[in-house]
Image (cartoon, rainbow, N blue to C red; front, side, top):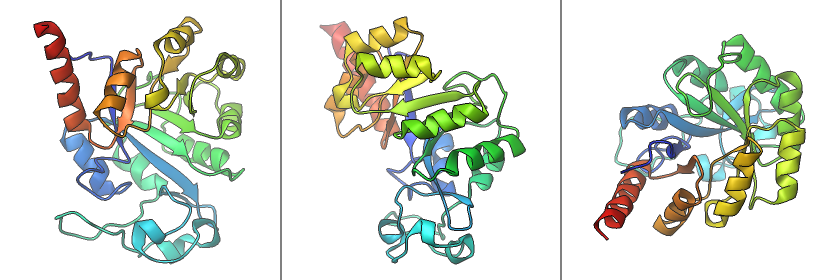
Length: 256
C-alpha cells in the first residue's frame, strides 16, 4: 500500500497544470487533494515579500527586470505567462495574500529564495502578523508552515527570530557534517536532492531527530529512489501522477 507518511508536496503549487507560484496553482493543488504546497519568496526593492522563483521577470512574464531593483507598484499589474488552456489573468502574489487565503487550509512550505539579509526577518514579521507562528503544527500538518532555504544563513537568521518553528535546509546530498550543522542550529529537517537520497544517511538523520524530505524530482526513477530512501516526502511538479507511480510500484512489489 501507499506509505501515507510519504508526503507529495505540490512544487510551486499544481505547476503541471497551472502557472507556477500563482494563487490559481495553489488553489488547484488543494482541489486535487494536495494540502502541502511549496512556493518561493523574494523581496522587492521596497521590501515587499512576493511569491516568485527567479530573481528576474524573463521566464515568468517575458519582460525584463530584476525583482530586487523594482518596487511592488511596478510588479503588481504584470501578468504571468500562461502556457496552459486555462482562462483568466495570472499575477505575482504577495506573501500576505497567500498567508490570508490558506490559513488553516494547507501546510505551507515557504522557501527563502534569495540571500537578502532582510528576507528572513521580514518573512517572520509577516508570519507573526497573520498568526502563522506558534501553532505547534508538525511538518506536513495542515495549518502549519515550514521555512526552507538552500542558504544556511537564512535558516539560522530565521531561527534567531523564532526558534520553535519548522525549518528545513535544502542541500545536494546529506553528509555527517550537515547533520552536525542541523543539530547545532536546531534545524528540523534536511532536504537532499532526490537522486542523491541515501537510506543510510536518511536513517542517520532520524537517529539525530532530524526529519528528511527531498527535492529535484525529474522522473519516476528519482521519485522511487526518494521513496525507498526512507524520506518523509518530496516536492514534485506532478503529484497526482507521482501518487500513481508509487501505488503501481507498491502493487508490483506485492504481486512479485
